[in-house]
Amino acid sequence: MTETLSRLYLRPLHPLHSILLAFPIALFSTGLASDIAFLNTSEMQWSNFASWAIAGALVFSAPIVALAALGLVWHRRPRAMLYFGLIAVMWIAGMINAFQHSHDAWSSVGTLGLLLSILTTVLALVASWIAFSYGRSREIV
Image (cartoon, rainbow, N blue to C red):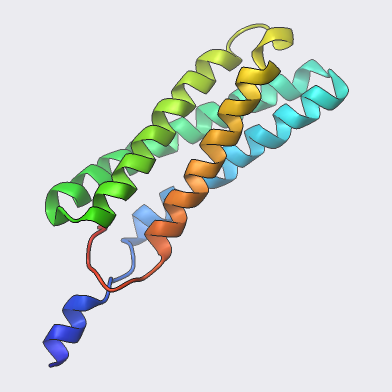
């Protein structure tokens, strides 16, 4: 009976995975806040700050994509597939956002840059919600 119960509950994420997952949440949301500040003030330094925050989020997201892929191979369950899909789409949208922010400051943010920043922030938050919500399955490493 206890073995069945222990198999049903998700164990916490590996500590390294948890630490790395905090960075995209903080950095993508920082990029979003910087984009909003740039749109309100037209101060070009906010666009530069957003570019660096997005680049940092991508650096720390790459190992998370690898860990999520390992979790997908290891567990092969719907929750692990959803988590990997969200993390992969977050990373791809973040890369497109980084390319968008590499333009000059006046055209980098705009509508597309702001929408991509919102998308990456929401995807990071939803993926972390799935990763940290301990449910009734053992799916994410």
